[in-house]
Image (cartoon, rainbow, N blue to C red; front, top):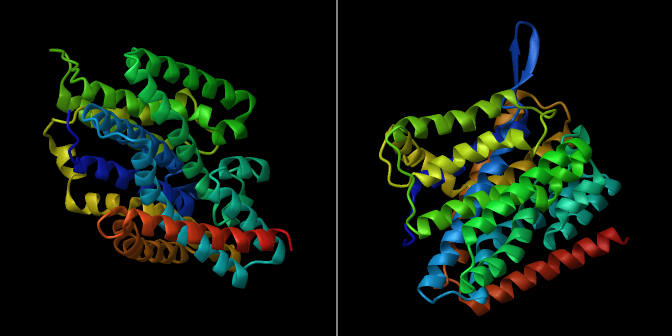
Amino acid sequence: MNYRYRPEIDGLRAIAVIAVVFYHANFKIIFENKEYNFLSGGYLGVDIFYVISGYLITQLILNDIKTKNFSFLNFYERRARRLLPALFVVIFTSIIAGYFLMLPSQFKNLSDSALSSLFFISNFYFYFSDNYFAEASSLKPLLHTWSLSIEEQFYLIFPPLLYFFYKKNKNIIKILLLLIIFSLAFSQFGSFFFKELNFYILISRIWELAFGALIAFYHFRNYKITSKILNKKLIYFFSLILILIPFFIYNEETPHPSLMTIFTILGTGIIIFYQNEKNLLKSILSSKPFVCVGLISYSFYLWHYPILAFKKIKSQNLSEFDKVEAILLALVLSVTSYFFIERPFRNKKTIKSKSFIKVILSLFLIIFIICFQISNS
C-alpha cells in the first residue's frame, strides 16, 4: 500500500471540527418552550480526529519502514512542523489578549495552562483545575489543548513500539486488538468510577487512536473483508448515521469515553476502511467545501476556543450573533493561519530544518519565559 491523498478524510475532519466548534459555541434551540443545546454531543468530533490521526500516522510509518525511509528524527520533525507553529502562535496571541482582557488571577491561570500546553501535559493540568464541562471551563482560552497533549503523548509512545514490533515480526493486529480491548474496558470502567480523569487521560483514549492504526495495518497488508451479504454502499451511509446521531442525542451526562463512544469510532472507521468505494456520501465528503474546511480544521480548532473564551470574559451572556461573529473571526484567522503558518512550515523546501528548529525554539523560549515570569510574579 502506497500513501495517497484521500479527500474524504479531509471531509471527515470538516465534520469533526464543525461539530466541536458548534458544541463550544453552545447554540440554543427552543422547542415547545424548552431550551435545548444544538449539537449537545459535538465534543465527539475530537474522537473522530483521534481515529483519523491513528490511521494516518500508522500508514505513514509503515510505508516509510517498507521503503526503508523511516527515521524517528524525520517523523518527529514532521509532527513538529504540523502541530507546533500554529499552536505557538495561538498561545502567544492568547497571552497578549489575556494581558488586556483578564483579571490578574485569570491571567496567571492562563499562563500556567500555556506552560502545560508547551510541554503537552495540559490534559493533566486541566484535570486538576476543573471539570471540562463546567461553566467556568468555558473561560479558559487554552482548555482545548488537552486533546493535543493526549495526541502528542501517543506520538511519543506508539511509533517506537510499532517500529519494534514490526521489526521483530510480531503479530501487530493481535497486539492492536488487545490494546483496543484493554483501553476500551478501562475507559468503560473509568466512566463510572473516575469520570473526570477518564476524560483527560491517554489510556482511556488510546483505543480510538489504535482503531485507526488497525485499519491502516489492514490496508498496509492489503487485507480485505468480503461478504456477499454486506452492501458496501449501505454500510457507508450507515456509518454516517453512526457519526451524526450521537452529535444530537449525547450530552454532558453521557459516559464518555466509554462503550457509548463506539458508534462514533465505528462510523469513522468504516468510512476510512472502505477507501476504494465510490458512492454519493464519499463524493460529498470529497467535495470542495468539505475538503476546504478539512484542510483548515487544525487551525480552526486552535483559534475558535480562545476567541469564544475571550468573548465570554468580556460578556458572559453571548447572543447567538456574538457566537456567529466569533466563529467567522475564527474562520478568517484559520484561513490566514493555514496559508501563512501551517503550509510554509510544513514545507521543508520553504523552511529548512535548521531554520525551523531556530524559529520553534525561539518561540518556545519566548512563551516559556513570559509565562514563567507571570506565573511566579
